[in-house]
Length: 104
Image 1 (cartoon, one colour):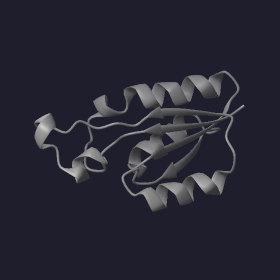
Image 2 (cartoon, rainbow, N blue to C red):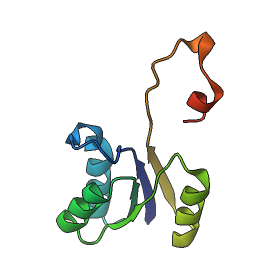
Image 3 (cartoon, rainbow, N blue to C red):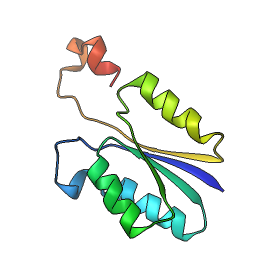
C-alpha cells in the first residue's frame, strides 16, 4: 500500500508537540508495511523521521503553497490512501474571518 501522510509543522517551531500524531501515524503505517511518503514544511523534523525510519520517504513542502504541494504530490504518483493530518488554528471571530485565513 502506498500512503501519503500530510502533517503540519511550522518551520520555526521546535516543540515536537505539533508533530506527534502525523509522525506517529507515519511510523505506524511504515511498520505495518506501507510505503509512506511524509510531507511537512520542516526539513529538520523530516530528517529525524528519516533517520528513525529510513524506509519513509520525506518531502519538504509548505502545505499553504498550493502549487508547490501539487507539484510535490504529483512527483510521487498515485497513492492508495491519504492521511490528512495537516491543520491550523486561526483565532478570529467566525463572522469576521478573512478569506485568506479561511483558505489556510
